[in-house]
View 1 (cartoon, one colour):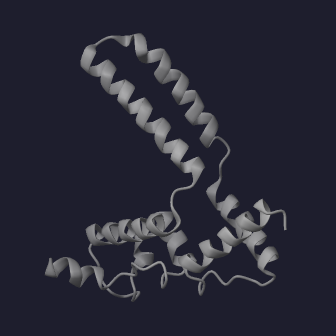
View 2 (cartoon, helix red, strand yellow; view 1 turned 120 degrees about the vertical axis):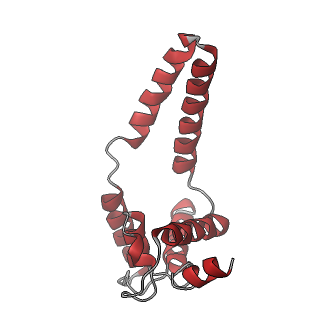
View 3 (cartoon, helix red, strand yellow; view 1 turned 60 degrees about the horizontal axis):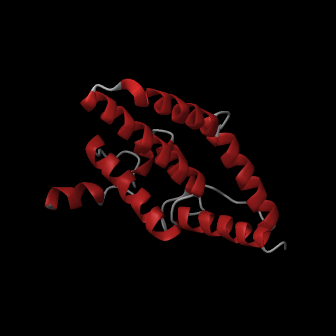
Length: 157
């Protein structure tokens, strides 16, 4: 436990402090972006743990997006059916696996997350009427801006 605290203290694990710039880099696979000091060594295992800690904090604070929840549900349904087929040897459920995989493909088709993120940032900036500096704006602040935008659009303002 002492080792874990030692290593995690070298990482940014709080959505109130972690900037969107570094969070996006971590989401794109550059886990070193979670380190507090650039030249500090952190084991990859603890960088992954730090990322999960930030993700959990985000989910606890903001919840899960409906589109992402649907994506996860489809993956679970597909895997459960594949397990059923593997255990029973009965391939009659394969048609359902194929149908769900088509639905999953349609859900994820043409989704470039970086373009979507950039477009979302521009929309937030227009709504908030100021430029967002992603290197200074925390994950918490960014998603609060996004939620304000969503609420405003729902209310027709």
